[in-house]
Image (cartoon, rainbow, N blue to C red; front, side, top):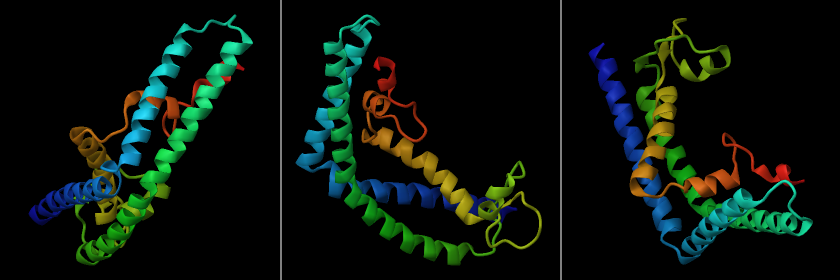
Length: 188
């Protein structure tokens, strides 16, 4: 049990280190560039401006105002797309580094139970949570599952601590996979 605890602490430490490495690579390739700074400032400005306009608009607003808002939303969407393209080169570099690191860590932790889950994962996650482990106890946790969980939570917090996370206004306007969709349909 003590080796399992040591492995768990080691994986959390590895996750923190790789998150810091990823943010360092992103800072070198993206965050310090003038293009990124300019686009980020533009997105922030447009998001706040659009949010204010949406708050002041009424249901009986004229077609002219609705068209202006739609144009601003389109401009914001284009700037968000450009911002994503600027970040793309760091994503490739990070992906390359993590692929190399994952191979090394998988060979180190291959077949070792690194944690005990307090639940039995749902069937389509069991392949990841029980990856390369012997036995039928699905509460045993593999390296890859714990690493992914740690990295998902730790990296976002590191971005917030370093002030590199996207602002709430920009995130709210951009929508996203887990975020609310943009409210463009409200004005149609």
